Image 1 (cartoon, rainbow, N blue to C red):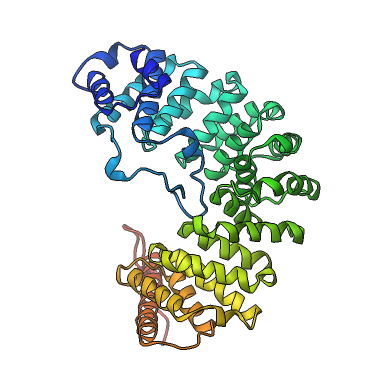
Image 2 (image 1 turned 45 degrees about the vertical axis):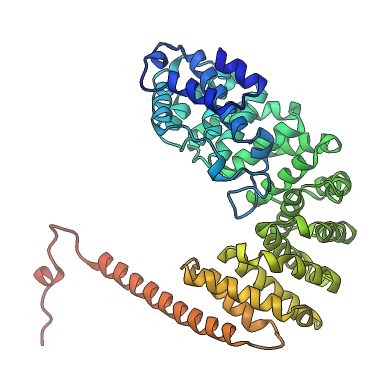
Length: 454
C-alpha cells in the first residue's frame, strides 16, 4: 500500500525506491506472503515509480512507434547513464511469483500486472505464456478498457500472440469497440498490429465504424496511430473513411505544435497504402514537414523523404528539397545504414524526376553522406540489401563530382557485395547438399539401386 500511494503521488526519490525494491526482493519472504491483488499492486506501483525516477511517462511510451525503429524520437528521453535499473534478481522473483499466483487474479489484476511488467520492460518468457493460458478463458469478463490496455501492453512487448488467444480476444472485444474512446481505439489497433496479429473482418468493421464516429474528437496522436497501425496491417480504408480522416486530421497535423513523429508516421503510412490523398492535403503535410525539419531526428528525416518520393515525387519542389538537405547534413553521422540507404534511394528518385535536383546537393552534403556510409561500412553495419541501395543510389544521383573518398567507398562496397553474394551462393549449395544426403540409418542409393548395364 505504501508503494501504491507513492506511485499515485509520483515518487521521484531513487533511494526510497531502492529500499522498497530491497524490502520486497529475494532476500525476504514478503513476496510469498502477498496475495494476488497485493502482488499486482506492487508490480504496477514499482513500474510507475521507476518511470517517474527515470523521467519517463506513459505518454512518452505511447510515442514509441517510429517505423523501422524501436526507440522514440523524443529528445527528452533520459540517457541510459541516468536510468535506474531494477535488479535482475528482483525481476526474476516477481515474474515467478506472478506465475505462481496466476489463478488468483481478477481481470483488473491481470491487466494491472501485465501493464506493470510491460513498463518494467520484462522480456516475454514463461510469465507471459502463463498470462495467455490464464486469461484466455476469462477475456469475456474483461471490461472494454481492460481489453484495450492488454492489447497495448502486448504491442509494447512485441509479443507473439497465440492464435487461440487471439480468437478469444477478438470475440470478447468486438462488440465493445463502438463504445471505446479514440485513445482506446488506438491502443487496441496498434497493439494488435505491432504484434502482427490481424483482426478478422467483423472486428475491423466495428473498429472502422467507431473510429469514424470519433474522428473529430480524436487527438493528433490517436489520428497518427490509427493510420500507422492500418499500414502495419497492410490495410487501406474505404474512400468514405479516408475522406473523413482528411477532414479531421488536416488541421491538427499541420499545426506547429504537432509532434514530428506523428506527422512522419502519417506520411509513412500513406506511402504504404493503396490510397492517393487529395493533392492539397498531401502538399499541406509536405509544408508542415518542411517547417519541422529542424526538429526531426535521423529516423524522421529518412522516413519523410522516402514517403515523399513514394507517394508523389513530382510534388517535391526545389525549396523543400533544399531545406531537407540543410536539415539532414549535420545529422547524417547519426543515420543507421538502413536510413542512409532509404535517403539516397529517395534522392535518386527525385533526381530522376527533376532536372534541378542534383544542383541542390552540395559537395558538403555529398561528403557528409559518404563519410557516414563509410563509417557504417567499416563497422560492418550494412546488410546486403541496404548496401545495394546505397551503391545504386550513389550511381544514379548526378553529383557534380566524384571525389576520391566516394570512389574508395564504392570500391570497398562493391567488393563486399560480391563477397556477400558468393557467401550466399555457397550457403545455398551447402543446404541443397544436406537436403540430398540420406537420413541416418537409411541405405545410400548405391547400395540398393540396380546397376546399369554397360
